[in-house]
Amino acid sequence: MNKIIVISVSTLLSLPCVAQSVQNISTLGCMLEPSKKVEISSPLASVIETIPVMRGEKVKKGQLLFKLRSGVESAGVDLAFAKSNFAERSALRNAELFGDDLLSNHERDEIETEKLIAAMELKVKQEELAMRTIYSPVDGVVIDRHNSIGEYVSTNPVLDVAVLDPLFVDVLMPFERFRDFTKGELLEVILPAPVNSQHRAKITIIDPIIDSASGTFRMRLELANKDYAIPAGVACQLQVITVI
Image 1 (tube, helix red, strand yellow):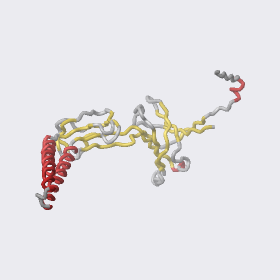
Image 2 (spheres, one colour):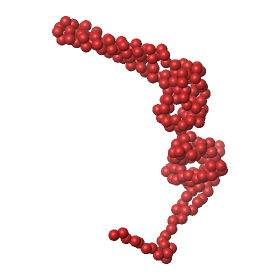
Image 3 (cartoon, helix red, strand yellow):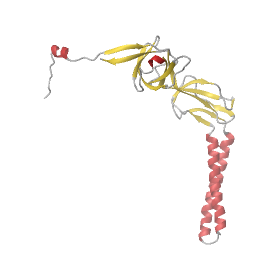
Image 4 (cartoon, helix red, strand yellow):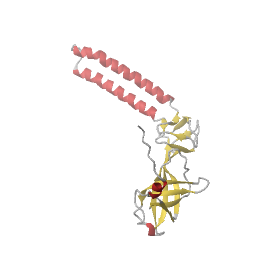
């Protein structure tokens, strides 16, 4: 049997309510920044064969960013693979001869060593080929693309990727407020027009060193941004939320 609970208006009015007191925080600077910026460079001097991502595109960790020309390296892997297979077959054939005492220990050792060397050479060639395919080390957004297909690259960055989830809220505070905040505390981050939104962020860093010249210290908050709806590079304001 279903129970129906009836609450009178007088009962509702008598229930305690939770209110919040909002206090603006006077800062000397408050800015939203990417939590990480990664400059993706080529590990080798070579020519770009393909670069499928564009500026402003979201990328996932492990996604292909660009690939260098690798015809010679690919052929080197095929050659090393053939040598390794031959050494493996040779070792199997000669194992029977050794069992029948038709090979000396020294001859068997030479065959096994050649097999091991061939396997190691194959591994080296595979690693050299793998170095020519570059994947994203993070989830983020491509904020700059410096090169295109066919261009020669060396040590300079090819792509810049920014991590926008979470965002960092970097704050510059006057020394007088140094004891007013604690690590882990939640503050309200207010974003101006045209964003016009507010979000709660957690204090993760309170710098223990005061800049003597300006009489300021830095504080950092972490702000979740799963759908990338909040842009980086935006000035902000802070508020303290107090439950009363």
